[in-house]
Length: 150
Image (cartoon, rainbow, N blue to C red):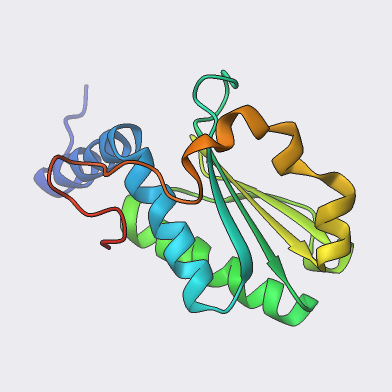
């Protein structure tokens, strides 16, 4: 039986801590995605709390961009921010050329639409309308933390 070296033990411990942070800080990570979208110039960024209506994820982040180049840049920027912030690996379905991209970050689904007409066609906000009562932001992730912080 081979024991892990001290370095390997530290690496596995860090990974376990990252996953615990992801599970405990879904709100914070969702707000981080929203902030990155706003920094990149995405339009109509919406954060939806779906914990009461969906067993597979807790939050939806929906954003609209004007073109596929911006969509690709936004997806790369958010994926890098999420990986650095929480150690989450991005699972992406589709490409910006298809006008709708979905990224799975565990408890958070990130939707990017290329064009407002595509977003209106699929109407995800209408599908999740009971969850929209609180608007774009969610409650702070920790007591005393401001929702816009990050």
